[in-house]
Length: 150
Image (cartoon, rainbow, N blue to C red; front, side):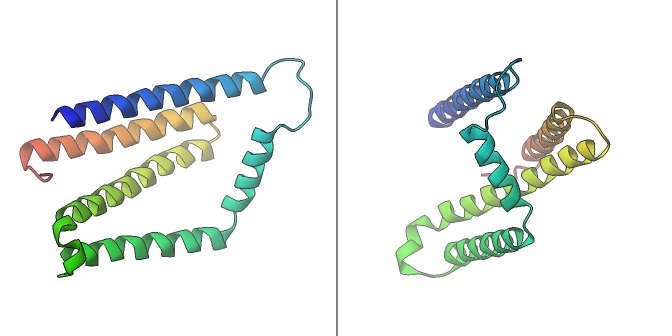
């Protein structure tokens, strides 16, 4: 139990650091009187935006994720000698990956739903965070009532 607490503390610390760095970067970008030259951050985000808007990238990502989850499931439930000791851990990894994918889907659905209605990025992130929080709240409630995990 102590290791989970330490892991949670480390992850929250990293999240706080990432938030501070992101806020500093955004504040630096919106400084009044700044020159219009393109810095590396803007160039990278523009390039990533172009890549993400390509349907082939989404198709390849879906196939890779589906094959990866399928391979982990087969390895965790199969009778393979080299993963015999890790089968429980592999199944837990599968549960975590599927849970993160579903939570990401809920977050992005709420985010793009709000953005599609004309509101800003902050509103989209707030709605997505609220929806993802509801997913975690439902998971905790189900765990307390039924005991799904562990």
